[in-house]
Image 1 (cartoon, rainbow, N blue to C red):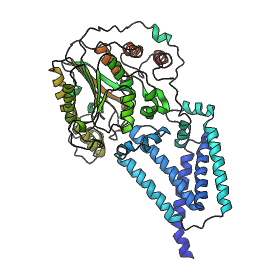
Image 2: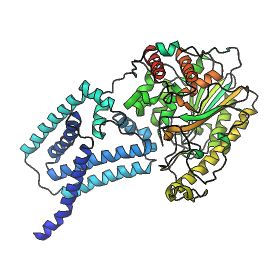
Image 3: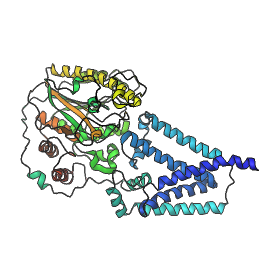
Image 4: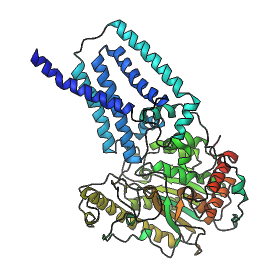
Length: 551
């Protein structure tokens, strides 16, 4: 009997620890309000469901606690990669089969999912021999579960609770509450701003008057995956390579640091801001799912704007057209053609995501597209991928970085990353030279969509706030030596499209005219603009008067 009891001790200790961990997760943001009720009621509803299903209390408690802890771990994984928490809309992203290849590309996420499965198997192995409880107890558990679900639904749908939760964003009120409250807002509502439009409209310092008879240039925009100038990192005493694509040259017409709304991943957020001229942060908990929930409501985009000016618009992507709902989103925004390198001869299956396709190869296909569509001006949006992580922490420290930061893992990852940026730099400079010698008027803009996730937790060499959300952009052309006006020390990514339209002297819709004016009024800043009244007035105008993102 003593031996039997000794065998049960490890399983009892495990059950105690995993349950304690789950209760800690539920109480992470405990309040004597809707927050605590939703968290603990969710725990109990899962527990009673499994008691009804299996008739075994210990097995049900183990599985329930494992699921709660795993949910919190998945939230931390998302925070690690994207600096954001899990919301209900992430479920649609994660369960979309076209995204599986991308999600599994992140090793930490894969390990988490595998660990979840193994823990559930462990629970079954440890407690399956437990005797089943009576049928009456199982039926009672079912009734309790249904009552708890009804209570959670009622509390989650309460308008005051929703408004209080929204006021706590972007952090929210803990993983469980964030999921339930964001689920209640699946109906769409455009961002709302109380400030009147009159303040923005009264500012007459700048007006946009295009010269519509100019020769319309071809326009190429290159999203440089995970690209930031490594010199932004504070590395005293380290001599990094010189990157020509970040330097001032004879053909550069505008460049500055770029304010983006994502870190370490979430390329689609930068795509959305570039293509629509809107700040993804304005959509609060819908931010991460803008390609799913917001894009169908957008009224203006760079694609539709250029098509009105006679352009043929193309996206060249190394990823599957369904990846993160990109294909449907591009179509919603008015694209003419979405094309992958495989359709131009690259040796891979069409369904493959080309994680390591060289950037110079992507740009060679841009040249092919320019040749194929030469009867009208062309806009090409090309995305790179070779600069994407993960980055090898065991990589040789080719630049003696560890002498500055004293962290061998980050030094290795950063050294690996810089090698990728050197390849990108050569490809970008080569294409810039191609543009500068091209007979047809051509504009070439490239920008970093977000910083790489190399584990950097040190300081940056900039006085600008929120340095983790900074990259850079550069705009070159071959038809005018006049520099773009009102380019400050930082430009918001939401202004890049209007900068292109303004530079090309194209006619624009009221939305992009407002976007151009706002960029010039605050020298490219939006979230960084010191005149917060102007920002709110501008946003009231575009969202509530122009209805740029629907109603």
